[in-house]
Image 1 (cartoon, rainbow, N blue to C red):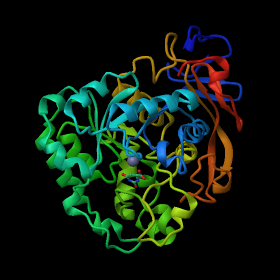
Image 2: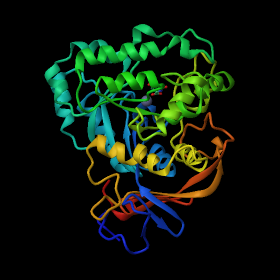
Image 3: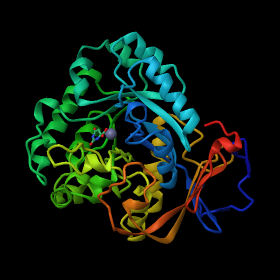
Length: 399
Ligand code: DOR
Ligand code: ZN
């Protein structure tokens, strides 16, 4: 039973699954604590032609995500209060899921502190192009920022001259390690620093050694440089896909409960069909995937590669803990009534033509996957149910 978007009773219609408090059997599927994506590019503002707060969060809801945290590399960047207010307004009016925002490094250090005070702002995102400025930034200000997401690639050790299938040579693992060393010289070892979209185990190992948390994305587990050679632009992403050997080792480590990887994120990075059809050297990097990610992972569950418990830890419990959200990543009374309801038996075929995202291209085209999202419940409202969407504003639910 749900009241005001919270679970108040778990008896009616729900049943405890096994000995855990994690998920319940429903008549049409299994309700998991709502998936949270800590790394989504919803775009919006002047990039709304690629994706916006409505299309991006609808795609997220279809993918089983009950909450997403949006990236600030928009046009204009979310590095000042005016842009932040515009983004928040757009989310408030259009979002189908709960949401949060990472800010980009503000020019004014005072503004960084002010932006942190907005609810929904979870922290700062650092891109390779920010490293130089970060090194000169006031350390006291950085200490006050609770969470910092790092794109770890040292700009001085990467280039764009490699052919498709070989981008891993131009943007090598060494550039990720050098980036970590640079970041560590500025931030030291501290809580709340997360190395996002880790592509390989070496980077994960060094990140953990330095006291940072880690996340990886499905494309680093399921695609490699052979796919980049075969598919071209739709598999072009930064940091790049690694070799098959690297990919297999990352996957093997991820599925273990002793893994060096704490969380998963989608890095849903939408670009238009036209942009992704340019010549390989010209097309923008980024993989649009949020609506398929849960099916891709559930397929691994069905193949006995990944356990459901580990999946919940990677997409619900880990992210909730990182974001400091005590009422999330759980389904006990008192928890937020956010559920990812899955049907482990339902098969789907990935078709870009059926995508909700404005970015109708995917490296997973035609893949047949077993295990799907049946419904996505946000604060008690089934915002996505069996291919139909419900606008949470119809129920006056504040996200
Ligand atoms: O491939 C990428 N695409 N990597 C990034 O860091 C940015 C992202 C985007 O915004 O498209
Ligand atoms: Zn990203």
